[in-house]
Image (cartoon, rainbow, N blue to C red; front, side, top):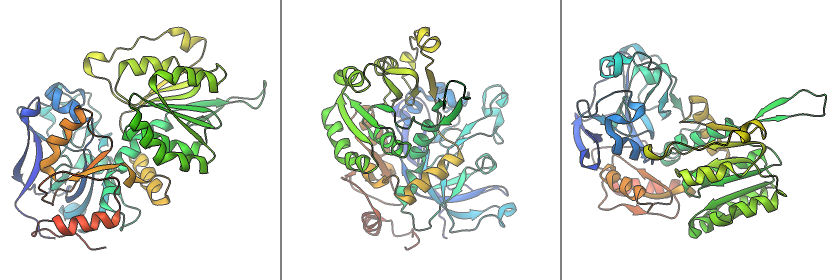
Length: 423
């Protein structure tokens, strides 16, 4: 594979959009225990907004000063191996395709002096944070990522690039739902049996009908709750979700109901006969929605703080009686683990989830700042896929995406000096 000397990358060099740009940087040379990979497709996660707007103050940077040491962003993507370090030649070879798990549960190995207190107490790093990110034409896969087993081989070499890039957000959804824990008893004298996941035969509420909320609905179906209630403030988002998922839910024996936020409390009360919901997933970064969601829980219910709240709105008022008398559980998750990425890839391969139905727009790296501003202004109702080796005059909006559309798109827009393997 021919690798150029320089590449385009989305670089953050301070706080705010004025310090976010696409620039030419040298293509890194892998060390003996590193791998260089070509980025085939990358997603744009809304969490990037927190990094851009908070800069060096973002908690997961662990003291890394982006003003002194700019970072390449990007936590969603899929890669093809381009060059392999000398010590890894028996493990990897050029042309192999992988998904990347960005949350790396490994202590820093490189640049420890750039972290607070020389990385003392830091036991987790992240791709697109202090490790090179995926919003670039090439990515250096460092020792941390490899030690954490965060380079995950695709189950199908013919998996479309966009699908492999969406494995990470789907893995986040899968991991979050696995944090739910319900206890089952066969009788008064029987032992409690814990079971991970949403309560089968129960009522699940998902607040927020954006892309991640809809993913939660689709990934919830195998747990077989009897009813899923999806709520949002915007009617057309609910209409889109209903059209996308209602028939699939019914085929799995699950009823999907969509309601506006002001009708949610009454709906839950009616369908549960006043008992409440067994699982409430907060898939929107709103303090009001979170507080409202806590009031929907049934006894023994689980509330999932899936979406992060803004820094100035992160403190929640909790009635301790909910925890003590109603025995509710509050859970959260931030990213997934390699096993979750494997589960997400398998879910797409098996048809459990349709990744193409979540793609809202496609573009190249130059479109990243615009996409982030659109996310900030709530103008995007889906995922954006950026193809780093393409050149487009404008961001393209689509109703859905699939392999033929992707292949046609790449054939039209790939830069002449790059080539992707044919399928």
